[in-house]
Length: 551
Image (tube, rainbow, N blue to C red):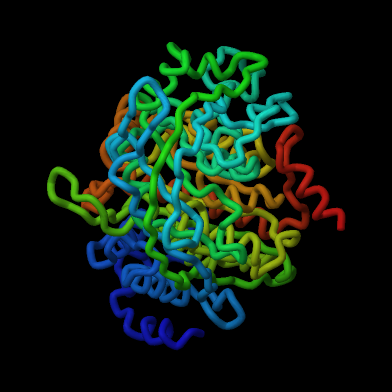
């Protein structure tokens, strides 16, 4: 074990928390194994101001990861990485400071767009300065190349040295045709990460995404909070020079002004989704400079394992990200610490509670159970990406990933929401439990948001591991449907990625315990089976898994 972390663990006296009933744990039925009080007690620590928003590379990381490791140890988990509770995740922190204005020339008159108000930009290139100097602007529609949908926004287009403006989400969203892409359900082609990746593959110098609230599923404040300032990336041998010089976002109003100058007016999404759409040169150029501060360091995933009694070389994986946004812009109340109580102290609290439930169960699992608290989810799912590409335990022997992220704090619900419903057979396990509990199953509340691609389970899914992410539905058991919907909207509008995502003593964690309990029961069943759950026909991840299992 890393000596620095060992010392911190020894000092983690605050790790001993109340709220866990020690007297009757061995006789608890599975549905009563998770305590909402215990979950709250962990959130209270992880979302405390002293952890400074749990941003990687800070003292907040040191405190958070030491606490999680101490709790894993208390739960009876062995160190998950060759005698250590920590997996090193080497990253680079790039703090990009853009010029105050983005200068647009070549049109009828020069245009100056202002940082934060009109645009945000960053770079992955590990250079002191990057610059767009009169880079020609091209409207590349949705920025999608999808052969299976016979769609190519870059067809016949040479964007080398140019900057592409692209729309968020994909052509199917609000098209009125559920068979066009996946209709209102976002595909991976709709994610901002894909837009950046594809623009780089095409050789563009810059890529700027047009922000629109409904297709993005979040407002401009989320963009400014999440995509500006210091950003973390996994280190790469090429120093990320294969990526675009500039990656960024522009407001819808600013984008429409630029597009209108080239005759693109009205519903720009409708224009871009027309069959046979061809990219449109805007006959304007963009100039922008980014000055960068580089910092190389190592963050940490936290891993613990409960070894299986008969098949220890097969693994059930529980994941949750421990990080949040750190310290940023103060809100109206002057609070500048982004504590992330729901996002995602709740998920970490839940996997700690699940770990204790497994350890206290009468019958030990036949397969090994791995608990993994990952870093840098908020920076682009980096900790889970690093584990998936540098697995401690073989992915072809990993039965499933059960992920918990931003669990609802508005109590138990009569319905359970499955992210990306229709993907894999793990959903059938949830459905069986829901039926026994008198609950209904629903899909994504907002399928256009692409939730299945927005948390750590995705990095396991795309490498073939069946991955499940569930959350509370919207129908409150005690207050009805309107209450749940109002709470969801309030969180999205006023707390998501904002300093107001705080812990409070009156937080209702019964719904968090409900989700944790269901996934505990799913894991219990999986751990005592011999079969491997698979992907359902039509899933884009099925072929990868079938190939790995067939080896």
